[in-house]
Amino acid sequence: MIEGLEPYSEYRAAGLPWLPTIPRHWSVVRAKSVLRSVDVRSKTGEEELLTVSSERGVVPRRTASVTMFKAESYVGHKLCWPDDLVINSLWAWGRGLGVAREHGIISTAYGVYRRRDPNELHSGYLHELVRSTPFQWELQVRSKGIWISRLQLTDASFLDAPLPVPPPDEQAAIVRFLDHADRRIRRYIRAKEKLIKLLEEQKQTIIHQAVTRGLDPGVPKKESGIPWIGGVPQHWRISRVKGEFASLNARRVPLSSTERGKMTLRRYDYYGASGIIDKVDDFIFDDELLLIAEDGANLVLRNLPLAIVARGRFWVNNHAHILKPRRGNLDFLACMMESIDYSPWITGAAQPKLTKDRLMSVQLAVPPAAEQDAIMAAVGLRTSHLRSSLAVAKNEVDLLRELRTRLIADVVTGQLDVRAATAALPDEPTDDEPIDDPDEPLDDDLDADGDAPEDEDA
Image (cartoon, rainbow, N blue to C red; front, top):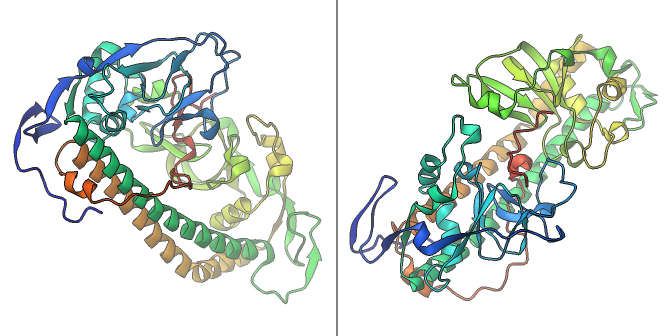
């Protein structure tokens, strides 16, 4: 795929901090010479609702994991069309931009830019260029504001940005090559992700069996009265979450993204419903505690762990329950809490929620402390090979993503010449599989009203 790729034969100075040289026959132009700002508003509010993802670009909101509520009406919101460049003006610096593939409604906080001459600027090349790692420098320095969480990219500032532009036929070659490479890399990633999912399922099966049944299958059993467990060792204690944990929810303190944006030291983990979402200057806990998601789609989807062990000094917002064990092995208790099907206790359809009262009423079957230690030791041994295989597979996925990022950056900035490689590419059938990586973070999508997912504080 990339074997044999070489730099161009001749370069000249580009005069850009993020791009010292470009191929001699390329141009550097201001964005305003090839793009113009457009502002057309919806009269009905019934077009497809789109959003911007830092990983996927401009996508239908129905396919994204947006946590913000929908507006009552989208009349008067901006519209975009296929091949328009859409930029979330508040999150351009965080890769919140991309070329649209379809017509739809976007936020009034977004900018829409249309090519002046489609024959001179390929929409696919533009998409890859503005989302590339080198171009992030340009977006960051042109986004202005007091705090990083509220930096804004204006139309005038973006349209004054320099763009390296190869000849039209070369843009087309670059797009074709990157599409070919991207599809191959994504296929490799999908294969690795399927393996990771299988290994995770095997690991969780071993853990679930151990923390709900114990290590000795021959020990006398009793009926627990808990539907999701059934029979348990006779000597295990039947309890509830409130009997095993004290709730520290009253000590939670949410911090808005604006407040966090003012911080400078950023040495302590800041936890939300899905784990660590930021770093902050101070801490409110110095302990070993268990965090359980209070709300969010993950309560239903279970794409990420619900039970998270937090140790040391940290801060927790109001989207995670904070539980302090009254006794026992914290790691065992975390595995036990993770193994629970919380569906009967979850309320809300649009915004799933697990209230404190419902969580504390969940029934548990708990072994003695010494047995908890033995179970965790056995689980560690039984899953060691799976954890090793998972680490290898996840590292390979990371390397593949790094390869893709570096390849795009080198090609769209003219550091590698792909013209000959593109000419030798075979015709490929359409890939009907989804091209998005299955493990992209749930909270990665930027919401349709211009805020980032980390602005989850109620």
